[in-house]
Length: 265
Image (tube, rainbow, N blue to C red; front, top):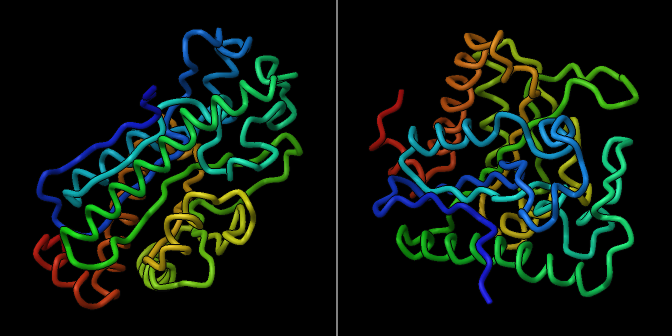
């Protein structure tokens, strides 16, 4: 039995060894689960998906002419950025909101979601990275795209507009931070609003750190995706894409060789 829980956007001839991932791209719930008994307002909110990230990631793919894998279903159905054994891989509550369709699940239902949705997504990332590694004869860099709210239910304001989440390997973190700090006025969260060392960064940790490839998670505060902030979003996109390009140059050979051919600067 095969269930496609991902959207794999492939370029036959990608320009550089860089894969984008967007775990929380979608707020869809499989039809048979009746929206987990949530109303549409809840499914349009941040608890269901990372607002703005799907479009943002697709634009990055176009700019860098490379590949991306996006989650197909809501994080409320299965959270692809959590270990399969994590308590909130299938959460019963998010930001104070109870998720009726996830309560009192049988063991077989949990295993079903993990096997046919969670595992298929991560297997696809693994296969795609290995193919790109072979194509470029080096470890493909991994950039995960997420968004976060300006505050959670506790109303504590999050001042950062961009968050850079990292662990011990800072090969992407350092040049991204340098470019954004030197060339923009955005408030940058260094391992904020979450820390890369917390257990909520499964994709980055599994496919980046454990495979010894350059990696980072980029978080964008989701109010920037509101229509009233269109010009601000365009500026932020340009800043982040330039910072990513700069990071590929700073990685050195062979990454800089492929990046220079793009001639983005």
